[in-house]
Length: 276
Image: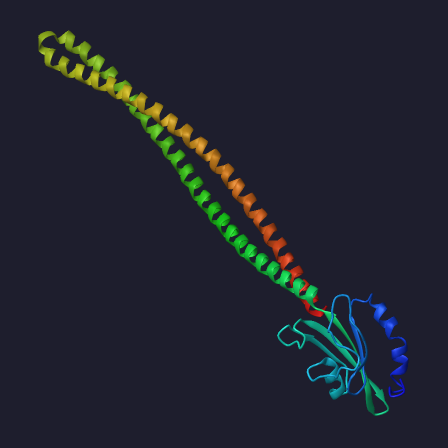
């Protein structure tokens, strides 16, 4: 231990304690100006480095030594000298103005990357759901407008049927009066005897026409009544559909709000994953 700098010896004395302080999960290494003099792999990360191995360029330990400051790095699999991603912090130890060595701790990024990927998938899913929610909200709004249009048309049809019913009532009254006039004409023709025979024929035709008109008016009224009942039923169903469309729109708004909050949570998760 004589060749080891005096400022590193107290750190070496507590190195095992520092490693155990993090439950043995992380890699802990201590290097002098050239090589690693003490190290322990973690349960979650193993570098296959041995005491005496040289500090190589590209290692956080090397960068801290060269830059003379604490270095924190997140290494991707592509950047790694060891074939796996990790996060490292390397702290230079000074002996006066000179760097005597570096203490480095490295944590595995597997969980971080899994969390980051999961957050990415959640973000994509919530974004897609939000877009679909907006589409459903737009459809619900369009449905409500169409129902409003149909309701207005149904109301106008009801008003039109009432007008037609009033017209049929008028035709029925005219037919009744015409039939009465025809009957009076027939009586007068009978009184006129042979001179009124031609007028009697006309009176009969008028009465027949009035009777036919009255019967047709009754049939039309029955048909209009059925149509009016059907329109009322349709109007009730349209009212129910409008209520359901409004409820759907309200639920869609709540879902969109919940998805917006979820997106915020996913963004927080992304930031947390990057900071872990």
